[in-house]
Length: 267
Image (cartoon, rainbow, N blue to C red; front, side, top):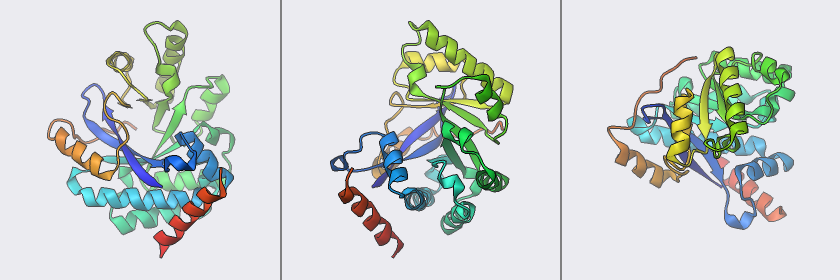
């Protein structure tokens, strides 16, 4: 397992303000998409260890980048992570070891948190938010019911990240445009910023900019990159692109390999 990084830029300036840490497994593992990675880790009971590894590796990389690092780093958590009573302490320990400020960390959670939000997860989220960590709802869009709208107001979110499926062919798909406008209205009502993921062309970038999205990521700007590639990409963008982020408030073999990686990391 390695961690890749995909730039996230602010709109309309297109200045890099954040990067998302993304897990990548060898092709031989048979896992092809991020959703595959998450499902496998959850099914095999590896979420806790995987999260700790991503935190340690990505925060360590941010420390090594120093002033060259974007203002914020986003990591993904599974709803199962939020049920771990010691989650906050582990995140705070990882931050302290690397010297990265809590306010520079953004945690992304998917829509499942809306149906798995209990006392433990609420306590974890509140503890992290109180420390200055931001929360973003990742992959938002498939369900736009009034219930979802009301549930959003129960979470201390700062951002909705819209799923790529709702951004395809906006010029020719009136239904997608309508759904996207609904999301824009929901975000405005809830006081949330909007981010677009999976933007792959100038037309889509122009559309989300006109609709008031605050930031975006996608292959149109840059793909996910390993540490050397990401560091070189950052260097090529300076000084025009880097800017401070504005705040608005199935196999056993794979399991053995990952488990071994966890063990070697901790020794």
